[in-house]
Amino acid sequence: MADHPKSFHLTAPIHEYLVAHGTPPDAVQQGLIDRTAELGGISMMQIAPEQGAFMTILTRLLGVRNAIEIGTFTGYSALCIARGLADDGRLVCCDVSEEWTAIARDAWEQAGVADRIDLRIAPALETIATLPEGEHLDLVFIDADKDNYAAYYEALLPRVRRNGVILVDNTLWSGAVIDPEANDANTVAIRAFNDLVAADDRVDTVQLSISDGLTLLRKR
Image (cartoon, rainbow, N blue to C red; front, side, top):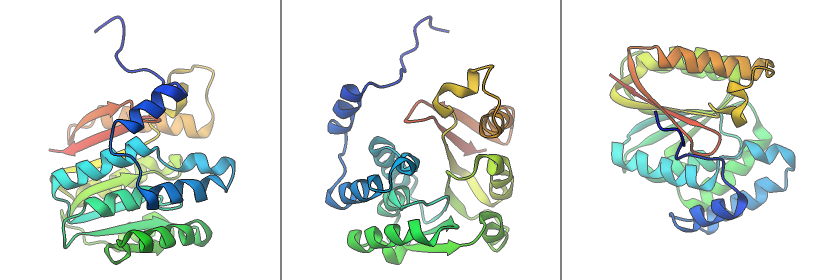
């Protein structure tokens, strides 16, 4: 293992440079970023622009037709996935907030992708239970309550096709995962999830240092 890792926590100027030298947010995405920022500190739940660009590219590369997102917030990640879907693709979005997802609906309409998105306001495990049990999902994105990460994963993996992908957000948790003094419920849950998937022979796993840590799992 190299003594000096190539990944690092980004400074604000480096992050600005990184976003500027990828596919930048367009007018609709920037409008959604700005509107979400008006919510105050909770806006930190929105994914970073470079993560959104990555997810759009990955969705296109996989030729995704069937996708599900656990945790939608104000809709930026769903917008990015929906834009990468195949022409007949559909994205099921799971959230429990009418208030936050109302902002999402506006952005999806502006972007012309609302017809690709099936938003379901209910506990995600209840929504997952209504899905077909066979292997039909091409892409899964999990970004919701951390104590249920393992439950979402176990409920969805049997429904993911071979070579399908699961993306899981916040798996570095601002570095708290390696802090022995950090033992709050969220950190403990994320550590347990990370250990679970690292040892799971049903998937290939890579933990990426995009944003707050993005784990990519390929179903074998």
